[in-house]
Length: 353
Image (tube, rainbow, N blue to C red; front, top):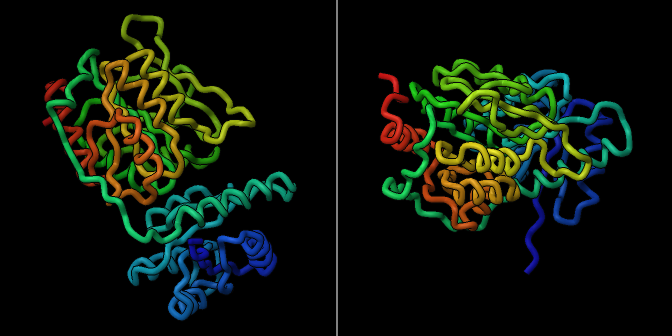
């Protein structure tokens, strides 16, 4: 039986932008554009009248802007919101995600056919990911500390986190809950260039960690968080001295679907320092991270995943769990306390206070 189409409301004060977005979406058989609105105020009225599944939202608009719309939409438990913004305003996008936006699509720089087609594909993919679920096949949260005790070799623990759609808020929540853990955290969040630098700046200080976008030669140290740069692959290699690990970055190839790639990061950790590494797969579309996590656990590391009940999109955690490598499955609010407990058992001096 064919699925019902995803219904969409387009909100943008620019007539040309509205027209372009509608044309992109109307070509997709699984998507129905219900209407369009010129600002947040009109958008809220049409949300109430039409009950769309998804709203595409511009942030800079007269009268009620996108931020105001998000605040009111969240208070009313409205539809999922997909922000469409330019590369010039990454901090605005991150603020919108904190206010409840489902995800974002960056407008291409320039009006090339290639850039517009890439935007169309991403827009369609993320709207499809926002499709209302008929029912959730809930994965029962489980925490088996007896089986979650393998990483224990090295001067300090490493926690590697992979996320995509819905990830910025989930990552921030996880890191805030790791307050006082003297670990090095590596974050691989699917984001374009520029956005990852802004994301790192926004995270800086969360949980008491010093956060920065990763650069070639950065040394892994406890109390540090490194965010993989957008458009680049991040990996870990041995440094010049014993037990020193440093970061390397590599430009993505044209055929790479994800850059940064969670699989590449986890696979490098499997090779260089598995017995002190926890790999954590959070919300996201697709299956990035599953192969890398499998390699990490096989080499002696630990595999964790976010439970379906809290994941914005359960694709990546589901794929990781399907490999049989995930030992702990928990909602995002419980992941950090469980990590603190497990890390503290194996590295008693890594927990402050």
